[in-house]
Image (cartoon, rainbow, N blue to C red):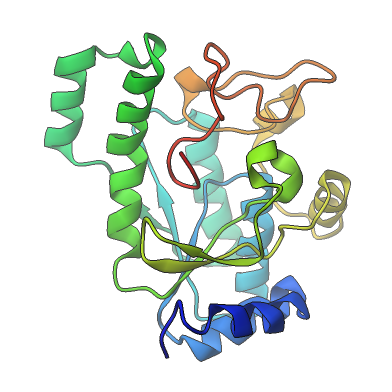
Length: 234
C-alpha cells in the first residue's frame, strides 16, 4: 500500500473509530510497523494504557534527551512496571551533543531561538528519526487544544519530514476528558503536573504555568516562538 496515496481513504476510516479501535485497526493493517513516541505526558500515558490493556502490537519508545526531569525518568520505570511492557529508549548521538555544547555552551539554548532549535534537533529530532526508521505509522499524543499550531491538525496526516503517516488518536479530546480518563483508569502520571507543569519537556526548558496562561506557556518561556521543538512542526 502506498502510504501517502491512500491517506485520505484511511483518514475517513480513522475518523469513525475510537482511539482504541484506531490503534487496533492500524496495528493490524501495518503489522509490525506502528510506533508510538511517548514523552510520558498525560496524553501519552493514556495511549500507553490503551496499547497495553489491549495487547496491541505497537512499539513504544521514548527519547531521553539527557536533560529530563528525574520525575520523568521515574515515571518511565513505573509505567513499565505497572503495564509489564518495555519502552525502548533512544538517546542523542554523543559526538553531536559534544559538538553542540562546544559551539553554544551547556545552556546556550537560552541565547537565541536558533540555538534552542539546534539543541532540540540534536537531542530530540535526530533520535526520533532513528526511532521511526522502518515504520509506517507514527502514533502521537497530540491534542488540538494544546496550542494554536495544532488546531488545524487531523487525526491522520502525512509527516513529510519523516516520510510517515502520523496518527493522533486523542486529537479531539479535551483537557478535562483526559484527566477524567486518567483518574478512572488509575493511570500513573508525572507528579510535576500537580505543580502546574502542564507541558513537560527538558528541565531547563520547562516551568510551571500561572492560572490563565496557555498550556504551552511553560515551554521555552523566554522566547517568542511557536513553542515547538521540531518534532511536530517548525
